[in-house]
Length: 117
Image 1: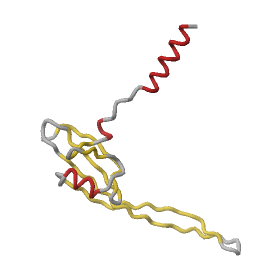
Image 2 (image 1 turned 90 degrees about the vertical axis):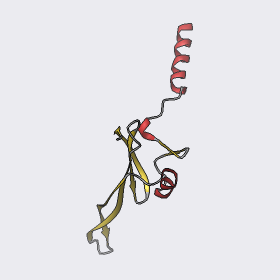
Image 3 (image 1 turned 90 degrees about the horizontal axis):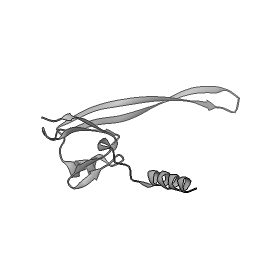
Image 4 (image 1 turned 120 degrees about the vertical axis):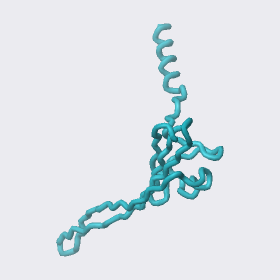
């Protein structure tokens, strides 16, 4: 019985113990942590000018069926344009390069590269 209680306590501690944060999931600038979901302006204000900015426009075609009272169906397509920017922060040879991807002005992804130069 004591073995079962000890096992349950150990399992509960496993789920309660804090998990280490992924290094690529956050980025510290100006004393603040930059996280996914923040605006491009916020990141620029905290981190300053990136080393490089790559811009592109993505297009996503979405189709949908529009029904009419006469039981006719018409297929329509809607094109959504997405402004994509990838900001590169090269922090020097002692730190990793960070790649921040913005979609329509919101931070959607952060990746860590090799050491900078």
